[in-house]
Length: 313
Image (cartoon, rainbow, N blue to C red; front, side, top):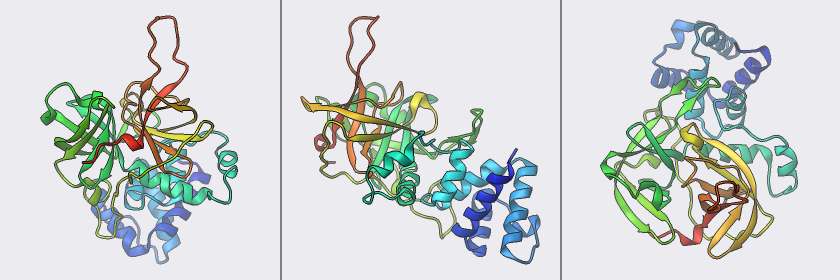
């Protein structure tokens, strides 16, 4: 059930993000719905109100939010509504105080805008129905991950699933856009990194695979030199346990022996996840937890491979 406060925030976000014509296009291309069959209201505010009321009463409000975000992934208002409905990576408690530590370099609205864009560039690597780990676009048709994620088995069966969304109960709202892996463009087994060549240029397509002409392009993560030091904040975007993209905060504990040791929470499915500094600069690629040899011992840190180790490809 959509509460009144959330409905108001969604209405404001839709009015800000879409013109009447582009709202009609989004409904038609992404949801196969004709706005004229939903409402014939005369002014735009009433049109959006009727649309939200119909979507809520007919049970497709989550689909409306996901479709709107696919069209305008960087819109902070739409992202806030999606996060409140658990259709986007949740923001941790105390985010505002974390961001304020970096003012005036960071602005919360711009920070959330970039987060919304990045969520569409991180995907789940899978073989059949079995999740393997996380990968992310670094060029229109290139995906970066850890080598150990894909080293076993036939690459023809491996896919990158983008845009996967589920609601708070685990019900899949959008199956996602799957992209085949054409081969390995570059690999460094010693550093545990692999650049995968994708069958299509997913980075040059709109989110959701097929969108209206005015939809934003997905884009990709820029790989460039980055400096991190102990105490820096890290943000990890990951397909934890094979679920939808989640965000975790942590700190850099140390940078030594060609590894970044960090404290962000991770688990199975996290290998290959991008680790960003607080200004969304790619710092490293999450590899795994601290190696432990005693069953009773818990890892004290996680490991990430610095971005400087990424092989050209």
